[in-house]
Each structure stands twice: as structure tokens, then as C-alpha cells.
Length: 409
Image 1 (cartoon, rainbow, N blue to C red):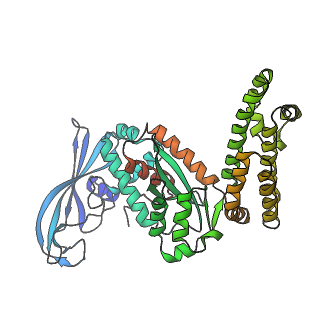
Image 2 (cartoon, rainbow, N blue to C red):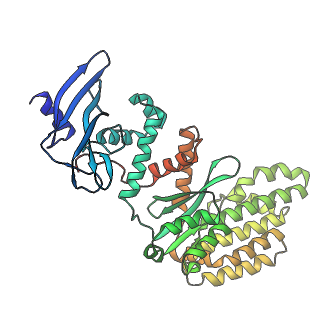
Image 3 (cartoon, rainbow, N blue to C red):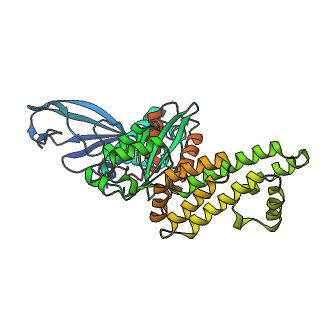
């Protein structure tokens, strides 16, 4: 097999395209592959596909996978046609996309590297500009969104994450497979509303559950766009437990200020013991809580209600859960602890979502895991100045998209 035939096989060329020559330039560390087109084959419009007369040709270059240690360039005089409907257009080539300076195989190679390394690292390794690598990522995400429009969306999870300090947030919508379906600016009603607007009516009706925190903005967006939303919204165990542990910690701090001076150091040391659930405590820790409860009466009572809430979550599914929560709410409101009573009132208003979470066994666990991975991605990239690039990186790494181009389709 001669070198021209070899590179025709490597590039996956077929009629009317063929390799006319291969040149090695050692001084520049480059291999140049000259490709031409059979002049007898008719030219077609890249938009409508009709046969059109040629207009002229222009030289174009594409970066290809390296040949051993040499950078490889594909050079072609690409014809342009004169379409009566669309005007003067450049003919499509099978080894690259219309506006790309890189072959499909090279872009697939870059995409595989970007999954494991930052843009800066891939840029240095492949001797390409940062902007060139970022453009390849942008085309990959665009290609992936076009290739995989019908991702699973029957069980959704909504969460927010910080873009940078100063209350600058984005909203992330994911599915039960841990795939990010959308990344929207802000954490307002319109942020989540834009995602709902992007869904077709049949996909909206197919939604079974939407797991979220108790954000009023997300609730309003869901009630505005989703039918029978009160049967689908779910407030998972994580957010309810987070509210209770936060209240417990604040109550302990308030009680510590009123406690005897000799006990304050011991109370401070016990801060993590109070936050753990009772079943995981050792005998010494249980005795510590019992001893300190005599001096921290409000803290001991809030800890009791935290444990009772956990028992309801773990001990009930659907039957009896509503009655158990109603009893918990009534008792919490009778304690005289203002902060606990306010939390109980809030849970009473949101009880429908808590019961839905228990019924569907819905959880924001995967969404929280994605949130942690997104923050790790931001650290690895040493921050993002551009929010659109940040959103694009999230979809690239966690969208579950089919982004690699197929050079032989």
C-alpha cells in the first residue's frame, strides 16, 4: 500500500475525495496531506442537496491526529457552489464539520482528553490555543444536545450552585440517572420556568416527581408550569434534616450563653454529638447528651424532635405517615420554643411535598453529588470568569451527552 492509499484509509475517504500527495516537513515538525476531489463528480448544495454549478475553490487546512511525532495537516482546495436558492456556499467535506478547523477524529481525541483534564492542560499537551480547545468543547456540547434530545425526565431533581461569591447562582436540573438536563442562570422562578418551557407538553405530563428544596421561587415555577404539581413536588429527607440540624445547632449556641460557665467548654465539645443521629451514638455520647440536657433544656428538646422526625422518615412509607407528621407538628408547636414552633409551621405548609417524597422515595442525593462535583470542577479549572463557559462545562462533564463526532457516518 502506497502512502496516498494509506492516508485515504486513515482519513476514511471515499469517492469523490482522494489523496494526491503526502509531504514531510521536518523543520516544522509537520506532515501535510494533500486531498483533491474528482472534477467529474457533480457538486451539490450543502443545504438543499440539489446539483449546482461550481463557483470557485479556496484552500482550507484541518488539523488531524499526529503522525508519530509530527503534527498532521489536511490541505484541500475546497469547491464553492452557486445555489439559486442559497447563494454561494462551500461544499461539505466528510472529515470535518462546516466551520471547524479540525478533523472529526481530532475533535473526538480532544473530547476524550477533556473528560479527564482541564482545558489549559489539554491546550499545552496538544499545542493549541485555549480558545481553540474551548471551541471544540462548545461544538461537542452543541452536538450532544442535538443528538440526545429525549433524555429521561420522569423523575427530576432541582438544585442550585454558586458560580462565584456574591450571591451569583445557577440552577441545575438533573434526572434520576444523575444526568444534568439543563443549567439556567440564577435561582429565581424564571430560572426553573425556562427549563419547563423547553419541555414539550407530553414530557411535562410524563413527570412523576420533582425533588427540590423548599425554595418559594422553585415552587411558584413548578405550580405555574406543571399540572397537579402538589402531587409531584417532593422535599427530600436531606433538606428537612438540614433544617432540623441547623435549628439544633443554633439552639445549642443560644442555650450555651445561659449555661453555667464551667459547662461551656463541655457544651462546645459536644456540638458534633448533638448533630449525629441517636442510633449511631456510643454509650459515652448518650450519657453526655443526657447530662447536658439538664442544663440545655431547649437543646435536649429540639434534639428529641430531630430524632422523632428521623424515625418517621425511616419507619413509615405512606400509610400512617400523615398522622405521624401531624402529631409531630402539633407537639412541636406546643413546646414554647419559638424557633421550633416556626419550623413546625413551615413543615405543616409543606407537608404535601414531604409525603410525596416518602411515597416516591424521591431524593436529591444525586443532585447534591452533582453539586459537589461541579464545585470540584470549578476548583480544577481555577475558577470561571465566563458564566456561559461554566454552564457549558457542567453539561460537558455531567450531561450524559453523546458528544463524540462520527467521522465515518
